[in-house]
Amino acid sequence: MKTKFVLVITVLLLVLALIAPLQSTKAQTDQANLSIHTVRVVAVGAWGVTHLTDIFTIHNNGTAAASSLEFGFSRLYRNNVYYAGAKDSQGRSLVLDADVGQGTEIYWMRAHFAQDVGANQNYTFTVQSVLNGVLTEAPGGYQYNFTAAPILTQDATYANVTFIGAPGSTFILPSSSPYQSFTYEGAPALFRQFKP
Figure 1 (cartoon, one colour):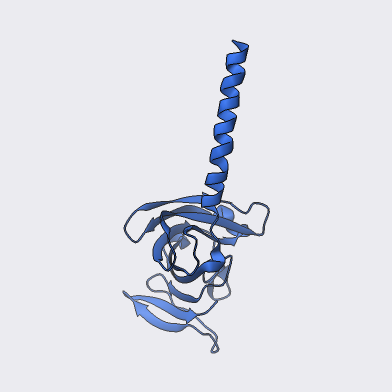
Figure 2: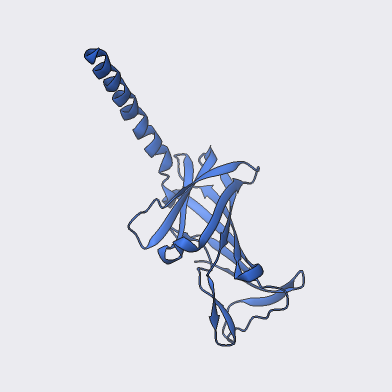
């Protein structure tokens, strides 16, 4: 009986030893080979709740398939995130790993693609998040205290950021601001395109 137990444990350990390297290899994509475009839409909801929609479009410039992308925000805001979910452009839900860079100042998340992205292929996915506490009182109104664009392990090739205020609100910007004002469905909005 004792020999049978030891044999079963040994077989389980061997299976785990074989599976673990395969999983960790798939989870790590060489992001240096990815060209990444980001679009962030920040919409202020009721009670100052902030809704983020981040759209990532990647192009794989490398020869190895890509299976994930890491993105993050300052660890200071970890407890302000109430929800985060991801879907690709075909509506497939993606797995999000949280806190993949434990011990760093950035709270890293990893989105696992629904399919591997081969050489010279594109892939688009959207992460929707709900945050609280990133709008704080400031003289004359409120201040947004969060990154304008998602933080990546490398610079994106392009970023597009849109802020949509609550209906009836206004934005006060310095004259040197790179943001352009416009109205979106009756609400004030700001827009900026840049290379991070």
